Amino acid sequence: MLYSRYPAQPATLPTRIRLSDGTTRTDLDSWSNEDLAAIGYYPVTEVKPQLGQNQIYGTPTLELDGSIVIATYPIETAPPPAITVSPWQIRKALNILNLRETVESAVASADQDAKDGWNHALSFDRYHPLVISMAANLNLTESDVTDLFLLASQQ
Image 1 (tube, rainbow, N blue to C red):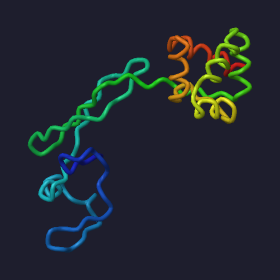
Image 2 (spheres, helix red, strand yellow):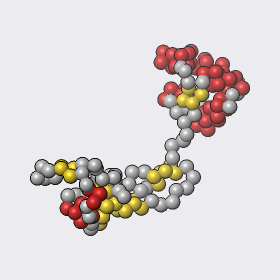
Image 3 (cartoon, rainbow, N blue to C red):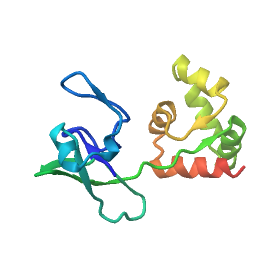
Image 4 (cartoon, one colour):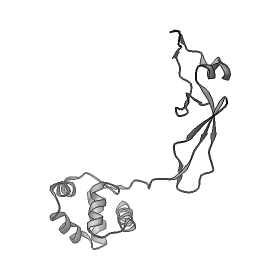
């Protein structure tokens, strides 16, 4: 069971606490909910709506309702999965899509960080800021870049 030291987020009971009189206790699992409430720990009732595809639970909002805390979890859109490919894979995909020369020309006119990334990276991450920046400079849509990385991941 989860508890909250309201307004703290739900968690399991600690293994040891220090009481106001300076003594410590390690047997909180044997305490009643009333005893726990007296020292500020309230049992949590979680409200989690059913998730759909590509959804996750966000950080719950907490409400102290008498002797329990109600934790209501919002639904959020899941972040897209990371796609990481090797330099060879990304270059092969760019060749297939006839984008290699365009990208290399853009890199040649970019700052030194972009040049170093292109020439020395051990891998390329779809959501890396340099990839996002380069895609914007080349007027590629998010879908274009995701398709490029998916193609690369199959090489």
